Image (cartoon, rainbow, N blue to C red; front, side, top):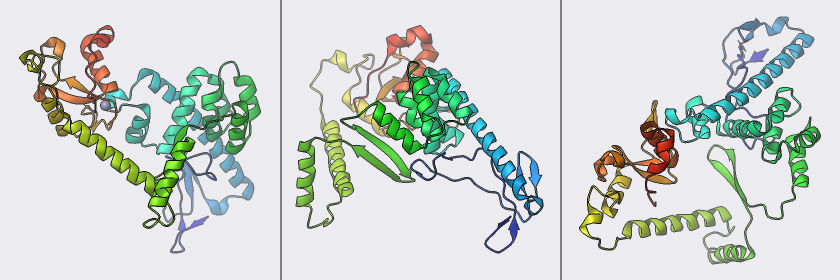
Length: 348
Ligand SMILES: [Zn+2]
């Protein structure tokens, strides 16, 4: 029986698969939201339309119900992962205005970022090694453990590696993976810790380390703690300002009249700036209800294709991420024609 803050008995509805859940709550690194309970004044809960009155439920019955719900959740998760494998193969996220499966899962499906990341990593590995998803389904691997294994399993090693990882915690699986592949250099990675907070793991050279130490010394009077986060924030802010200033200040060498004509494929600097500013440095593809949020690797897209006589003017150009530029080329020219009409990178 649950009791709310005013002391009333309440009903809690357990979603079979809570949005944004994570199988490794103790670790909580990818936990972005928690299961939502629906509170009412009646003393029962419903799961799959079945009403249970906690007052009449014996301890044995309650434990049995929890076991059954946990099995349902595991089955729902593995079925969701298998379905994502298929959505990925069909690239169904593109038509909804998303440039990636991750964007689709978070923006359209409503999964939390950590939940989406885990499921997609396992789904992608599952296309190579179906045994990984089988182990998720039969309960011998948690989703968190399967995600840790995902980059390391191959058809050749999966029997051995999955065998060793069965019924192990995420941390134990991380140690197993480290033993499989000792990493002298950890590279870098982002880990989403909580809403608004991201951990950066990075391996740096001794020279970069010395520069960071030097920056700490120079900032000692304003940052007695020598906070690396603040140093990074200030350094990256300066770098971005410097790069943007260089790009917008760049003037092109004088060109002949041919290069500047609207019938040329060349996009003059003034047109680039106008399109970039108007579209806000973001892919302007709109699909379904939403606009694509991609800001990286943008290209200039001819609304009326250049090959079909479309002019190289600000009115006829829009920013596109690489995926949507290719997607629209495929729609217009078909699968084979699309490769021949890749448009210019925006160089921003
Ligand atoms: Zn896009």
